[in-house]
Length: 289
Length: 261
Image (cartoon, rainbow over all chains, first blue to last red; front, side, top):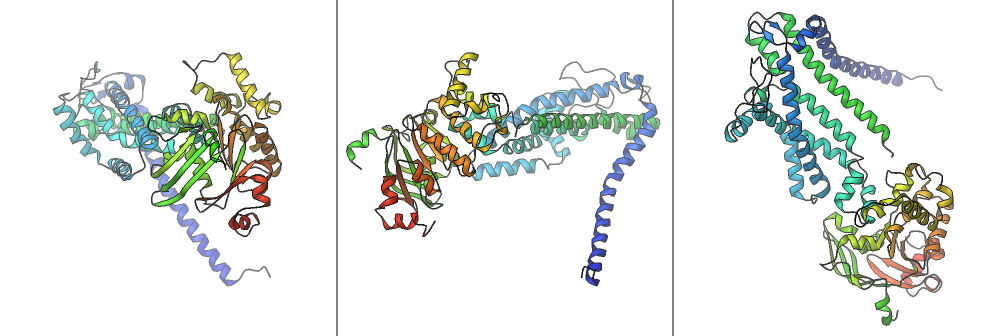
């Protein structure tokens, strides 16, 4: 009575077909990532040396290292973070904890999500108009970082809001029932329990920021500048733009310099992602509910 | 009830109406709840018991689309008056929820949370003061002996019964006069229910307790006066024994005999 019927067999074949189909898609998804990483390591790996990382490019960028670009990227990302994280987290706290739940709040939330989809070249042009020209920061780290900050704000806000809303409402009610103000509730209960999610969102954003090219190329990053920036009003080189330059703008750059630059950039991004995962795991372990 | 007692009522409402958006949840509720006793509120789901409870400490307002008319006086003071500081209302009127909601802190820090919020002028407690606050509060809810060795462990690790007692205990350092309890035993097993009921019974006299319950046996056992609500209106308010033995309204009689619910 438990033998398979013809119908069972047919279902089993369909089952198998879909399983293989979905599995194949999953493989297709990771294949490019693995290929890119392998090619980068194989071709760019030999270029990586202390000298490559810590010296200036020479001879029309065909030789030497990438130090100014590396430092420039760190500058750009740090200043962008300093600008976007406080604003983004504060805005998210307002929207999640204070704002009345009405159509205006919903409209603002929708606008923020849409803002995250604005192409980066549009942000770049906004940055030129607003920061370079209107505020007269010139092409500088400040203008480029603020452009990056504007671009990352929506993602910081969305990530923060989601982490805040993952904190159970019962915790807030518990605090209110003891006469806590909203801020006391946020400070002592909501934020400590959402900080892991906020940090994860922020760090992921940092890694995305590090790779952006369009928003900085008109606002503060230069093709070639063999000095380290000293203030935020200086221009700077950046890894992403440097990669673009050595790949397409300068003739006869040895392949290993191109691949080496790409490897450093992707290494930077991946290590920041790793930090993000580490932080999240650590803080999750400390959660008490 | 005699109107001469109105000035001594712990909670007194007059013509209290409440709307969630366009839905009216309370209709002309006039109640006088006596101080220092346990009053239970019974009635079918959606009859407005919890809504009433949640308007006394104004926690309803968080929803934003709630509109209230009429007045609620707690010890003679209108909690909706414009000069009222909502934090003071919440301090005077503590609330216990359906599901125990200890904060994700240690047992000790849960108890001290309220005390630290309202500490004057700076929220600095010496550790001996803090120990005393913790012990007093936990003694009061009959939890001290069970948890005194686990004070620094996460409150989430306690049993539900212990968590609910803790949630009551952490209100006490704030020195409320009224405790609102929204079905405090509905998440507990029978043994836990009995233990928490007993504990609440011990608190009467020191606090005015208003307890919403689905469980008629509980209302009967553990309250001195009982209010029956139906569809947003108060149908009957009388001493518990009277209400259960000789209900004054046929709707009350039908409900307590289980003809609807």
